[in-house]
Length: 111
Length: 117
Image 1: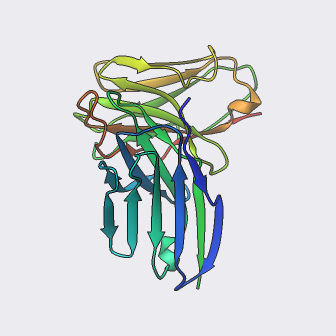
Image 2: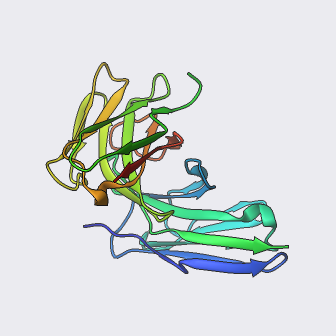
């Protein structure tokens, strides 16, 4: 069974601080996505990474896919209150359309 | 429609009753997914469809759960003899899918919140 473990589970920080969320698995994934979910809504895609070692930047967010394609990280620089939400990683294996989601990291950014 | 539509948005039922949850995906999206989310936790995979076929039903928690998709469009998730532990938000998502190349964005509906009393 494929599992994606995220850490930390909860994160409460003040505006301006930096943070990193981790997504780890013992399985190899062909691609990995990060989503953000706000209360009462469905998750929304932030990024897709497909190459081992790949780094993608989206404004203040930096995403990295591990060299072995088993893990990923999301780093947020100078967090803002608008970053508050549930962050979810999701992985796909080769030759399948099945997408497995991680356990989630709930981020709260205070002014 | 413009987005993924789910109905009902809220459903309260008594233990032992059957419920049907509906998902209307984005037009043209061949892949459709069902997930379950409890108390704002991560998403638990239930089943996905490629067209009308379900290549992977491994996430269905028990034989009380079933799903079908007709015409490559609307999908229905049915839960028979509901139990209290079935209470959760059921999320549906769709994407354009080339089979075996699952890198496209998943578009989610707002979910159906099920409460079993």
